[in-house]
Image (cartoon, rainbow, N blue to C red; front, side, top):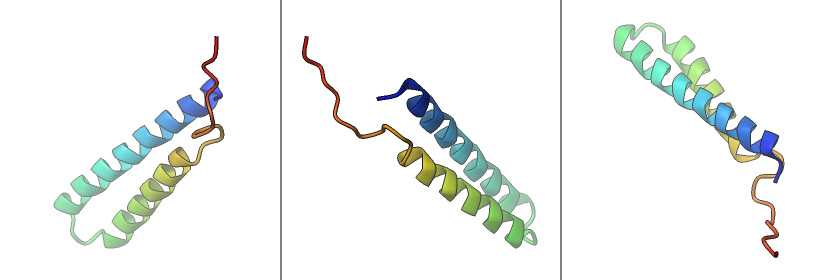
Length: 65
């Protein structure tokens, strides 16, 4: 498993969580910004999907010594 892939997955997951939290705050502050909120949630969902499908994630790990 590539360390860069793992790091990329973590960064994307954090970005997704931040975008989701920001969208929730925006929803509370301004109900008129529905389109902006929808776009932000869509970006968060895409980042979460990319984090789960990063290269090298889920491959077999050889732990033989």
